[in-house]
Length: 390
Picture 1 (cartoon, rainbow, N blue to C red):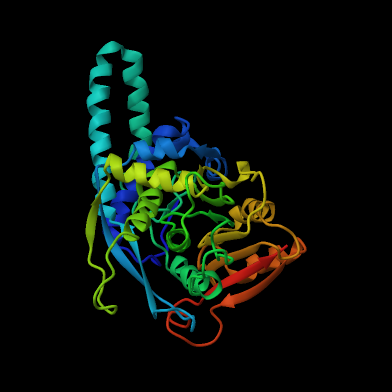
Picture 2 (cartoon, one colour):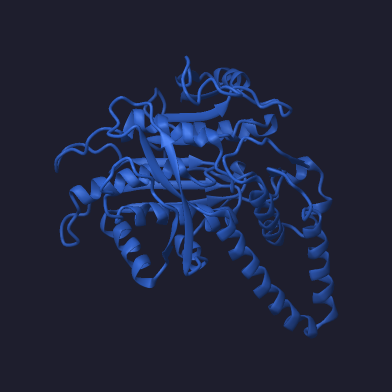
């Protein structure tokens, strides 16, 4: 079963092509009979797993191209009316997938001579892949959950984060930071632009008062990201975080109003060594998780939990709510922000149903972004950011 929302901010054709390729890669790691599974069975075909950072780093190409994403900020305390984040180009990720497919095809061609049984198994896998080749969809249930797109509510969440955590001026050494030393989880992260904004602020706080490699170890900063697809984490999520890191070295523009141009960065051993050194010296725990929400049981609660565009489907609300509750401390000690459309036509989800189910579990829901008039709030389908307290 596939579905299309048409609420993303990407080029639709490029995304559909890459989504098809990710579906193929996901099928290659899912049970062989996935194409024959019923919808309810297929919904949990990708089990929860932690994806080691080292493994994701090993998948990176030598060059990543990017396009800037400019987010309008509504916070009066923001130093600028906009902020710019860098996002990996979809065509660049698609080129990487095609290159991987060609390498796999070459390898399979050599292995095919080793036995008929192996050839038949690969043929069965090929049939399963073909099931999705012509799917022009945002979602392929149980296989791909839309993580390649930059959904508009994720940009709303960036704006909301600036209002709450990221817009204030950097303090002096020894003062309380807004990000450093805290813990963050983004559920259904995809392109992870909200976490990229958090990570950019963290880097700014670190650059203001860096820790000494020989000094006492700083309080850990935990940044955890979850997406259904491992391939989304490797193709889009991690590259976008690396782009945020690279952006911190860009020279300040002479004209603050000038736009950041598109470009690319080289993923050299020196660059990755510098990135890993930052994580080690500053005690930044950057962890990635894939698969179904039902298997995700956080070891401890977080200070901030983020999710956007994840409440569209009614069948997935119970495991999402279970994860949100498990990730949050009680009595509002965790800031839990859920960005969404007010209504998801055709699939049953939306603000009111989410609110009803949270309150049915004894939780409280308030709107912290999206009420009243304003650019991006009353155009098209209404959008909000909700705060959830358990």
